[in-house]
Image (cartoon, rainbow, N blue to C red; front, side):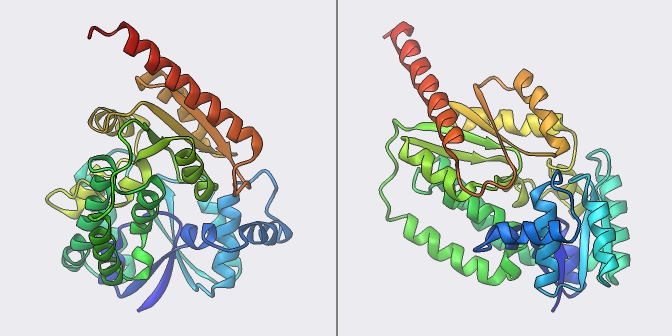
Length: 338
């Protein structure tokens, strides 16, 4: 299969139907043993310092890994993607764009899907057939998610990793399904986490310091049992058609569509507090205003850019937030009737 770089989650079904192997450039960037080097490489090429680290990392990953075709999402994700595609085009890379509609309407999503299919030389009918192949892998991702919040045998880090990988399934949904099945079988033999641990939601784009964050939280006696955007990557609401599925995918649309999904999960997963991650220089950070006015849980907002591990300032803020949650729980337990 021909490799095609993607800048965020896109309709994988169309790519597979057209004979492409998707490569999520974000996952390759953040999984690098030296992501800072990739950023500095982009800055040496002229990318400004006050540009999101992800955009710079995607640029260098694409060049170093020999990706010759890139599909970028120009509406519904990052406002800098359009210029990233222009710079990649300067390097002789074939660049394609996909725009999610401005509202989650199946008829609008269908129009965009058909346009992408035509661009890649396939049809929506063939993409629907490819979607049936992805369904088994996605069901396993949902099972891992349920084992996180309901059964308590999957860590927040593991949940993050399995769900975020559904953006491209590491290039093979068959291999992903095999590994996920083995992981689920192992988890069934694990002892659950203590029920007394605080339960957190993580909302916003995946953090650049994710590798440190989840482990640090667990050392503080806290678990992340809901990863909002990562879960959305797994397409938890498939619908009756691809158009309906991508209209139900909340990330590209209004923040209020995301809030409706988040609120339902806060109740279902018995969330004590929320961590909202915002990427420096990203327009999505402004959504923090709306989240704070709309979500009925304490929120800690963390900003990151090039820090791939938690610094002391972030650790202190997290510790203070968790102590506040515990204090609130103690007060509530004292005033609730026995």
